[in-house]
Image (cartoon, rainbow, N blue to C red; front, side):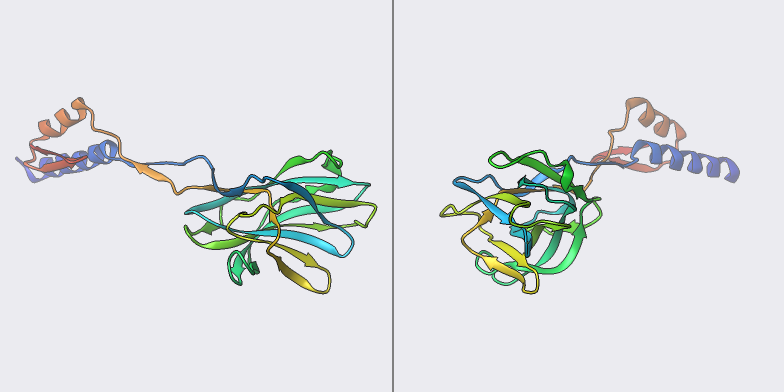
Length: 230
């Protein structure tokens, strides 16, 4: 066999193998990484000098997709809401407060909230799936407002004071004071992550293996643990 003919067959084999064992990433749908469904519920307000509520949680491996809170309002507060995810600071479950800011959601216009106490609604805050969270690592998720809110025009989140409650703990932010833990309250929340992509290798078809055999290169091809000598 001439050198050029053999080279042609080697190139052809390489192209065919790339087709046979080509890998395809399969992207999973977002899943709940951590949540608290609630039990004995009450309203945890954030208005006037209070502009944020938070909850510590534990992540799984994946990228941050979205978070959900059950929210309500009274009167006519204005402005925007955003969710944030921070690194964890303090003792998880007893003194959790936000650390370093890691991710910021798209804004939600407060005027679009339709639920008024005593009703509430599930509000989703979307992230861009670019921030990776690590399995078993603790973080803090918050919902924070900007704009006008006072005692007559405020916002509240559905929370609980169940015993036992969520393994983490709630926290609140007050203007001029900052974040403070609250071990009595847990927010009703869900954190969604997109798990890492699963790389799948398609099985070789009989005709493609036959072509490899027909090349007669004396090569050994291993496909999905099937050893084929040609």
